[in-house]
Amino acid sequence: MPELESEFFSALDAAGFVAGLELPFTGVVHAHDPEWLFRALPADWSVVLTLIPGTMERLARDPEFGLASSVEDGRRRAMAFASSARDAVFLLNDRLGRRAVTAVEIHSAPRPAVGVEPSAVAFHRSIDELRRWDWQGAVLSVEHCDAFVPGQPPAKGFLSLSAEITAIRASGGPTPIGVAINWGRSAIEARDPEMPALHLEQARAAGVLNGLIFSGATVGDSLYGDWADKHAPFAVSERDPHRLLTARRTRACLAVVKDAPLAFLGFKIQTLPKELAVADRVAELRRSAQILDKEAA
Image (cartoon, rainbow, N blue to C red):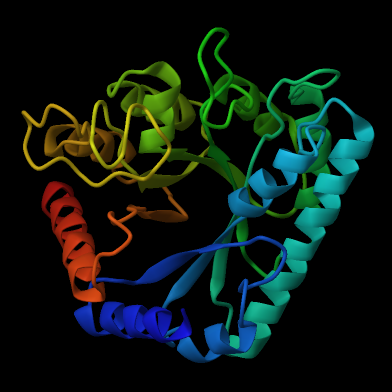
């Protein structure tokens, strides 16, 4: 609803703890009203454009779709989608009157299916092309999602982090590129809340780490389920039996990335239930920001 979305943006801006926004890209800069978005975005917010919503929408009806697709036609369709994202970067920067978009998150879809699989070779080919495009100063960031694990239902099921790192390191072009770790997705992949720190160490050791997003994971949680990619909040305490993103684990990850040249660092939290009032949503997000600020100090 436009009224609620406007109220939410205004409340976040007034709260003072938001410096930027991860903007979901499905093919247009806003699903219902791009002009509203241009008016509503605060003048000092940066934008990280993420292609995961549009990628998952297309993958649901086109299993061959993806920048890492072993089927060339599927890879080319993903490249066309990435081209529309580049157009969105130009549009956003133009309408906002500044270089607002600082990073674009891309993904190593598809997941394995009949006749197709994610391929590091194909992903390298895509990255090589993307790095030669003009992104108006925005960097590219491969957001690592849970890799496909045989016998385990995937949330995303894309390439392994090692394969993504290999493709990144082999690529060339003027646009900088790295890998971003999403805490929840790394934990979901391994079914282990200690894995995100290990993924961060792996990416930093390879010299490609350029982003970190804290998004939780849960076991047996009434709202967020079991190992589901629902962007759960930070745990209430170290002994929280359901929510696994604790202050200690946050601190351990921040220690790994200390002084690293990150393009972005933040959190992505879905506030549930959906009926929550705007004030309650902002309060939960403020709590997340306070945890992150405290552990980063």
